Length: 491
Image (cartoon, rainbow, N blue to C red; front, side):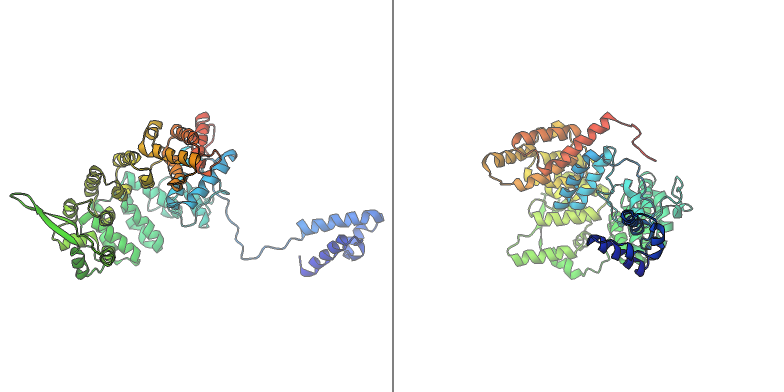
């Protein structure tokens, strides 16, 4: 439609809107079509032709810059049923209003997937750079990167020869699965192909080596010292530190480490064979506290241990935990990234035995399942105010009704709800929405229903949006039980 044609149609419309007859304004070609009609029919015929022209025949041509997208890929599971999408959207919105947004959103998606469903694309879509969502959504991530996932069916396995037959997100999923089953094969494939990928993609691929890291990975990690990307070089250095305990070549001056050692006290114990132990020096001013924090940020655990002429494992074994919570957490955070799995497990057992549960939380992503379960139950038997640390446990569907109902923290939360309902006192009530969502992740369907019953009995409003995830947990589970297969999966 050109400008003149559009102007003619606008004149016809304006004439009708003012209550007049528009036959005299019609194009000559249209007049010849309706000239034989009765006067009262002409306007109706003209209106029909104009409507067809406006809506169908003469629509503006698409700009040349538009690109036609491939159809959205179908995932391996069906979307959340329409009757439960509202609950899903409320639960999703709640994750965006609380801390740990990315972690909680990925756990929500994992919970929904465990019940046999995926998010509806109109309710949630990953971003093109998403690496945190469940592997199930990899086809959508590739589609957002303008990959035509319908163009051809990729082969069943990822190899050097089939590398280009897969899109980046799908490759990442397959490499992660391969790393879990055959670490050497996954590393060899990353070593062969990562160098040809862009920096951010290369970093994501090398991060996969973090799982089941072993001494066989060391030669490849050392070769990355000359990588083009600074982020890749830093990652390789930290992974090597976990394997070998080397001091990190990150430009730390010995003077900084020596100054930090000045904040550490050394004491000797033992009658015959005296052994040196380390503990934090008492901080006497805010300026001292600030300076020590600055030094801790700049100094690695490896450099600190080297300054004391010991390795990281020995330093952690001799450190007196429990005397300064801030310094304990800083050292454990560094250990979580730098020490090997054996040292990490010993450190976790020591912190758990010393009841330093909050400090232990920094190690959870790297701990085995039994230790994380022990941590989770210890948290449930602790303070309600500390339950947020369970975010680090990374579990879903892990708690049974008996695990929750008899726990000290859950009883305390119900007491907070009851106090708010009965007296209006909202002390600690601000923690309730986040904690209810946490139980929504952790509880199996039966436990979720028991939590719902308990908090409603305590006085929580049935319309409270904080209950959305618990309700979604139970609702999707009932669908799963009533129709375990029912043709719900799609190729």
